Image (cartoon, rainbow, N blue to C red; front, side, top):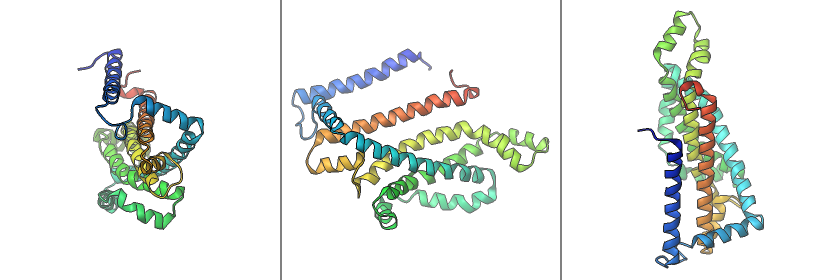
Length: 255
């Protein structure tokens, strides 16, 4: 049942506030030792300190650069391939079984191989993000294309349009809202694979700082960076949703 946007926001904010109060109570009343769960004040102080000395911004810049390049590269390849295999059975027979096979391989198993193949620089981080998102994206884009109503394609054939124009003028525009949703969902996965890539053989980034903090039992830094990752993911997701409403108003999204 739909509800007013103001009520939706109020409920969402109330959930976050409730969790924050529970966290504050658990640490303030010493139900949990600080080594396991530091207080909100301790986390805020530590993050402020890291921001003041530039460490936070260095890590954030490195991670944003890596996820941007890795995700854009994966998306730029997965969209045309997904459109092809979703539109033509011969392409689907050639590519879909292989993609389906690879996507079940755990990404974490590729970490040592990616270090051997690409070293420990940014290229290795791009590769892990690519492996973690590309194969899933291809199959999701394929499904988006297959959901285009056959009546649309039939109309194009009735008008005598060649396959290329049916693809570019009917199939792709009709599938674009679904493809955008695919990108939004897979962007969330990309954040996960970014952290995985930075947990091993990195010298900067949000994942790297979490690993270093673990060695020195700096739980307040770990919690702070985890929360920061959640905030970044939420922001990117909401930006994608807002752009969706602007780009695809004809699809019935609220204005």
